[in-house]
Image (tube, chains in turn yellow, purple):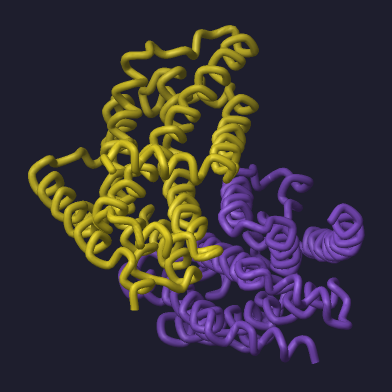
Length: 256
Length: 240
């Protein structure tokens, strides 16, 4: 079976899982306060950020801090539990497919979920920006190219984090521990982005990147900027390590 | 009897170690915070408890609420995963009594978690501040209040887990609710009555009428959630 067919099969499995519904609700809830408090964006002269940029970046900071990582934890639960119920995973493992390939296919689904959540966020952002433009009589809508650049930055920086969550859910069979460690690891990311060792902590990447962007857009605000040199190698190493471990461990518990 | 049954069920699910670990983790927050940057807090006005909770309660509650959400999801996941619920339904016990014994278990574990955290706050006050007279009374009041405000959150997340047979749906809804609670404006009383937002309240920073309002709100929500659970089971049974 080719890799793409495998990914297609995995997609079919989560077709009726309602996961997209949950992701959509999360994105809608995120933007409601921004629409209601659209006026706040005009009081940001001290930071030196324009209202439309502030509107955009505050919403995405809210997402990158908690909602997005937590949704990815939910996604890992979905991928691991759909097959553990009724022992579906045993049937998959009995097929002549490499377990590593299967593991990477599932990881690809997780990345797709991440991308679809970011796209939903962007869609809802444009809707809420249009609504706020109407209510505040000010154009909040940003050019699509700029938005595309920002959301791809968030997505790329989230890959090591997603790989880490995936490793947790593959290696730890007891669901409460994989969920608990995943969720608990998100909470301190607020503190970690203020330290020098942020690049060693994959859960803080998306939030750090978006905070750095905030610092770039706000002329009077000095936030830490991304330093590519320790970050990219460390992030690549973490991703490869996490994916390698999960490929090795995938299906081990069932084969015993 | 059925509470003991629930205790036996959670034996190998990691429920108890998870609450233990989560409690320790949240209790470590004030200790680490004080160890790293105690100079920021030592000169602040107010009692030690006020300062410590003001600085750390947000993050501690976040961990507590996430722990409750994950724990309650797990409690019902064990029932639904291998259709154990059908066997439970064939026993001569009420379905709602399963719910309430699970609730008692979670409430008890949350109390345990809060006691660990109260211990950590007492340790911090002893080590970095000085314990004045009436300290332990204030500590008990403070954490008793937090415990009471946590109850609606426990019952509601248990209700969500009961309603959704798939673990990711209940976890997803729980996570979305926690997230909603973090973005709700704190000044608005009606919105801060949202069960997932209530545990974020701090006893010391509220005046007596406000505290009374929150306590009444918590009790009302408990009653509503309990009633909703009874009705929900009746309705669902008629559709199965």
